[in-house]
Length: 100
Image (cartoon, rainbow, N blue to C red; front, side):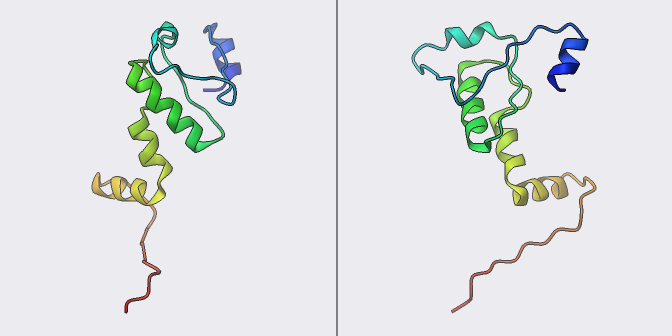
């Protein structure tokens, strides 16, 4: 859901830029003021780290850090989809390491 969709539905939101926010790991209280956080960072690493902290603080997030970790790793994503018998493009993995 993008910001225009939130506005159309009259949903209050605060847009945060992960390049400027910081987390005091000893004081989660300011973050607990949020009902939920929808992470949409351009940087996978910054978004994942924010989710890790928010999840540790007990702040509800639309996707958890665990889900983001799986989705950020295409091999793990393919393995998880295949193990759940979800339709998935034919995927194979080949190690490029040469055997001695």
